[in-house]
Length: 216
Image 1 (spheres, rainbow, N blue to C red):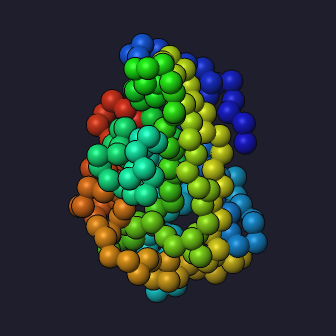
Image 2 (image 1 turned 45 degrees about the vertical axis):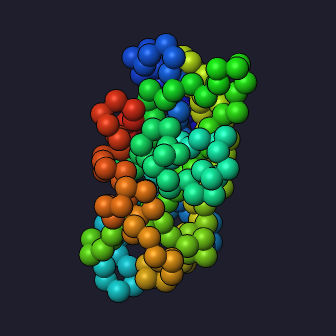
């Protein structure tokens, strides 16, 4: 999937609204089932909202972006630590396949070096009856973190992230209980401890100035 000319122009317009010392980060994603058949976008579903699990529980399948300090080894081991976040995590709506983080500070250091940031993109299962959570890799396979530089006045394109929902075959429903991690935690992995999975905001914007959910 390649960004359209209109999308590129929209990104430039958004970038012009950012400070000269900030950059913009964009990403796209797609979900596929165990047979690698497309679920969304341009697949069997119009979105990944209100899916039904094997137990009958409704859930949304969403995507979250974290931009993390790459110079601290502790952050690489635990990127949910709030002290490691360059901006607050952005949780995008289930009816979107593109997301944008605005007003991202440049990754260059004072000495002129540029180690970049650790870009962590996660799928999040958000049930109606319990806290949101990041599914186990055996349930939903996701790409690993990527280190990317953010330059002032530039767009950092993370390109397309492919998520494979191994627990879904053909029209079979997902067993979300088997997707949960056995480890205890805050229930959502966003590091804020509230269990909602959105980093204190569930509309794709962390603080009204650093992100947007974009449109399809």
